[in-house]
Length: 59
Image 1 (cartoon, rainbow, N blue to C red):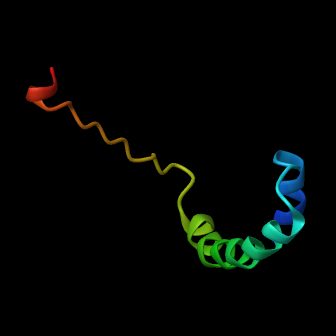
Image 2 (image 1 turned 135 degrees about the horizontal axis):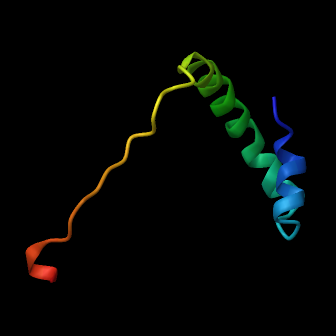
């Protein structure tokens, strides 16, 4: 698992430690949920690219 509190301190030291401590459990949970799915993806998988053209009215 990543040490989210250290990452937050490095990227945004102005965020109070108490605020970072509130979000760390959610980040740990997301990582635990998503890590197996990411590891199961084939290396050759391409990211999905979505292009939404502008509305004709906005041109």
